[in-house]
Length: 141
Image 1 (cartoon, rainbow, N blue to C red):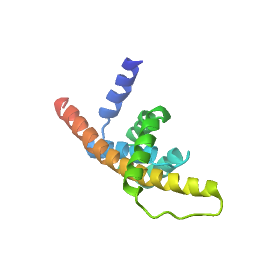
Image 2 (image 1 turned 90 degrees about the vertical axis):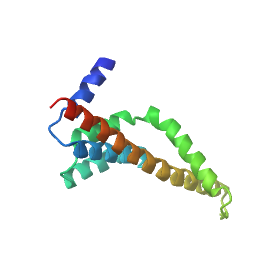
Image 3 (image 1 turned 30 degrees about the vertical axis):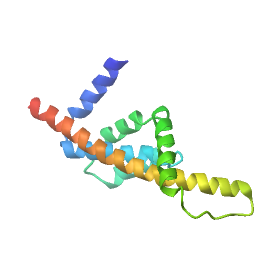
Image 4 (image 1 turned 90 degrees about the horizontal axis):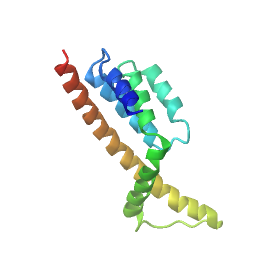
């Protein structure tokens, strides 16, 4: 299994595309995979692939494979914690139906934290992928 993953990663790195294109594809895939798109992330990824020509399609798909639902569970918890830290003292709005109050309180904390986490992971993934792909391609020229 690990050998198969290494083989696929090597195929992505050895693409005849630039490190920037590979890193951009992976970073956009990371962003769309981590954001709470409620199942539409892959469709949005396909739309991005159709619209923008300067990104690696394979590296975007690789990002979706890496950021699978099992990996996203701890990220969701981290997102909520960050949102809760930021909004803990925020004024509270109240609705007449209690469940709406709960959904409102929890969802806005999660979404705010998730936007922050997704942005950070996207930026980090771009630079990490760019560094390793650039290094690999220069080494194997």
